[in-house]
Image (cartoon, rainbow, N blue to C red; front, side):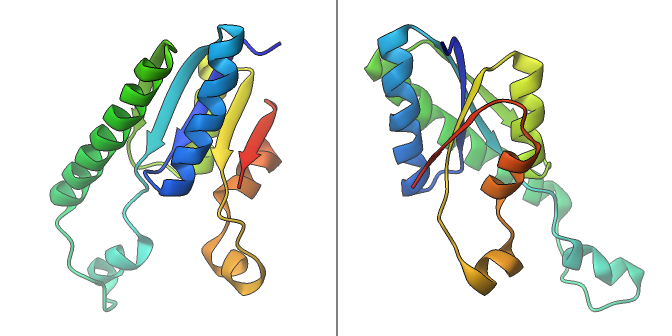
Length: 149
């Protein structure tokens, strides 16, 4: 069965439900848990200004610091929930990576045998334009993925 569960968090209310769904079986079967949050790379449109385009001025270090602070807050809240559930959990922050890529790579590197993540369930044009980290994770992961909606 599952012995090491990776739970992906983005700080949303829906991701909290994903955390709850991941912690519950972990507690019952005694699985280890790794809780992951990822800060995304600086948006490409922000970099366009340096290439002669009309980019948005951005303070790179402030962007990174904000990502770290948000990641720390998300992970602290998730770790507290794991502690309350009686589940041993490590927290992992990955800086400036595409979330799906970081989720798949972290699961592989850490030897996780289940990924738990939430999906907003966007459809149509919303999914096309916004992309879907869940779909991308499902597509590239060799580890089973439990999607919570």
